[in-house]
Image (cartoon, rainbow, N blue to C red):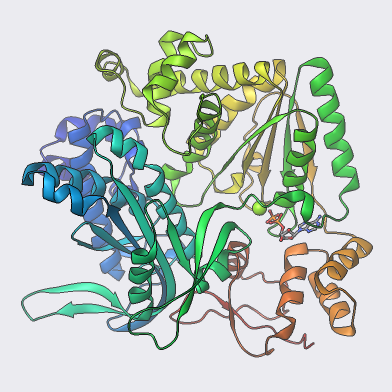
Amino acid sequence: MDVAEWLKGLGLDQYAPQFYDNHITGDLLPNLTADDLRDLGVSSVGHRRRLLDAIGLLRDKASADPLASTERSPVEQRETAPGERRQVTVLFVDLTGYTTLSKLLDAEEIEGILTAFFEVADAAIIEHGGTIDKHIGDCVMAVFGAPVAHDNDAERAVLAALGIRDSVPMLRQRLGRDIGVHAGIASGEVLASQVGSARHKAYTVTGESVNLASRLTDHARSGEVLLSSSVYRGLQDRLDCEDVGDIDVKGLVSPVRAWRLLGTRHAPVGNRAFVGRASELNQFAAATTTCLELGRGRVIYVRGEAGLGKTRLIEEFQHRARRNGFTCHSGLVLDFGAGSGRDAVRALIRSIVLAGDAEPSVGNVSPDSIGALVDAGQIGADHAIFLYDLLNVPPPIELRALYDAMDTGTRSRGVWTTITQLVASAARANALLIVIEDLHWSDASVLARISAVAEATSDCPLLLVLTSRNIGDPMARGWKPGGPILTIDLAPLHHEEALALARNVLGQMSPFAMSCLERAAGNPLFLEQLLRNAGSTPTAPFRTRSRAWCRLESTGSNPLTSRPCRRHPCSGSAFRLTGCAP
Ligand SMILES: Nc1ncnc2c1ncn2[C@@H]1O[C@H](COP(=O)(O)OP(=O)(O)O)[C@@H](O)[C@H]1O
Ligand SMILES: [Mg+2]
């Protein structure tokens, strides 16, 4: 596709030079995000909206047309054939307070509320790789897994729901109305097809999980996200949830169990087993002591294959750092594409800014909080505009004009300096441990922002812990975060450590457990999964329980079996547990 022609068709050809200068070719258009457009210098909200709508159409078209998918990543190339059975996750998000408002307000105001809500909800869904199936009244139905399937569709749906829920304070403020959202998420097999008459057909999915997600939404109170058991089971090691018991669902014979989503996992580390890693913990202890004594920190770079225990080790670091008086903040780089990957640093900065609020909230940062940071000297007044940009908070009108006049390079540099300033002043107030995980998914823009965080380590009590898999490791591609670096290359657990972990899972060892131990080869994730599936029929495929498994499958390197992994033809990832009978 010719980018200049496409822009011309939208009446926005004034942006063609920026697109050209930034090497945006036709194949990249469907993946552009609001952040990218901002970086390209599209400062007008109206223009951005128009471009995003057109980008959404390109994406829909690319999804519906398998031939157009040749440039997508391999995991995204599982397209739906007509009338195909698919494993999907369905998300319903519904406005609360809308019925009352619709009785009080005139049609224009109602339309304004719906538009604002759909803009936020649709953007979050698309950003996480979902498809907007339809808008029904004040509700959005989204599908993750069809027509395009990813390795981690349930997780994407959950993150999209959380993203929408976290946007509510901003929506309330913008609209001046007391609105809220509630959501339901269910996964299962559906029939994906073009439904309709000869005159009008639309791609959609039908099946029990659609009905279930909708009913879960009805049961969710304002601010709540309810999950079906299948979603909960697949993500239980990554989410904090509360059992809400059984609920009746029209059309289903027996009641179904539902789970209230509290957030992404922050399980109290103290209660969970932790084995081995003595030398890594000693290295961390030394870095902590030096950091506190000298007021200077470092980057700690933890590297290792999937499931080896990077996250678990970092949790232990955080636990110990807190005991030593450190404040901890973290961000996670997601694999949802370049645009949203940037959110790792945004989430981190948001968490630092909100922590300073008198009444910290989970929602968006308010302009007042940014003003307070300037007043307290934590960022220079001339940097406030970059913080508005970084946190996606609408700036005051006078700053907007200033921002509009800047070129992309000035903006990026301004954002980097602001990140360094803010992190440094937070660390000077109290020793800080910042964790940014999964750098193997990061692009150049994320890395530049992480470098800006790393800048602050050399003269502030700041420890920046980064994790990456070996495959995709940005340091192997020549990236260096700056400042002193301690690199920790994680090795598999030693036999005795793996044994201790196995005992913890099973209680006692058996020949079966010993065979799992051998197969897992010191990888704790594989070991846990093997042991926990002790009761399953060896030949029955079981659905993946974590992202790592899916990804391993997609790289064809599942060490559980010496055979190549099998992919279920239409329902995403599944494994066959072989040769390891209890
Ligand atoms: N040292 C350890 N002690 C106990 N359990 C561990 C240890 N390392 C990893 N695990 C467990 O193994 C699983 C995978 O670990 P994780 O830290 O998520 O791996 P990674 O981040 O490297 O992909 C988790 O369930 C985790 O709790
Ligand atoms: Mg991890």
